[in-house]
Image (cartoon, rainbow, N blue to C red; front, side, top):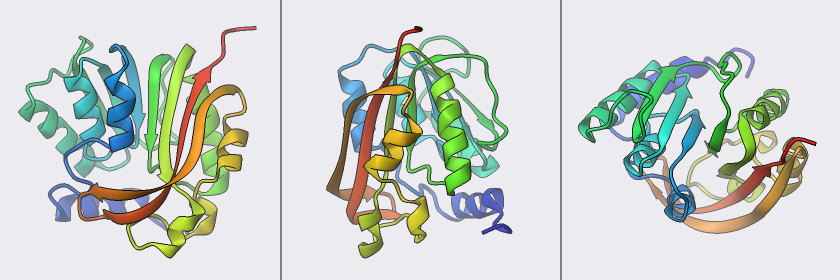
Length: 212
C-alpha cells in the first residue's frame, strides 16, 4: 500500500467510466438533506461530484475537493450542466483538486459529508480529527461507508478489513462530537457500475458541541 498512487488510480477510473458511482446522490445523503434548510457544506473526496451537485441544486453553498483532477473536472462539468454557479452564492459548487492530507481551510461548515472515504488507520484518524474542526458549533457530520461484513459481498469497497468502518471505530474517531445516530445496515446499492448489490454499510450522524 505504501507505493499506491491514489491520484493515478482515481484519475484512471474516472477517465475510463462515464459515471463511476452514478449521477444520483447517495440515498442516505439525499434523505438527510430532505428535511434540512440549506446552509454551508464541505464534501471531502466527492469524486465526480454527484453529492455536491445535488446539494447545490437544493440551495446549499458547497465546497468539495478530491485528489483526482479527472473527478473534479467532471464535477465542474456536471455543475455547469445543472446550471450551477461556481461562486460563494447560495446554490453553488466550488470544487478543487486536493489530497485529504493537504487540504486546508479555516472555514467552518453547517454540514460535512463523508461518503465511502476509506483510508488506512493512521491517515483516517488524523483526517477525521480535522473534520471535527471544520464543523461550526451545532454543525452536523453525516457519513456512510462499508462495514466489515462487506468482505462477504461483491458490491464494492476495500478488501482490507482495517479500512472498513465499525461503529466502535467511528465513535472513537469522533469522540469530540455528540452522536445523533449510528448504525450498521444491510442495503441494496444502485450507485453506478462499482456500487451494485447487497452491501453492509455503517451510517453516522454526529453534531459539533457548543464551546465549553
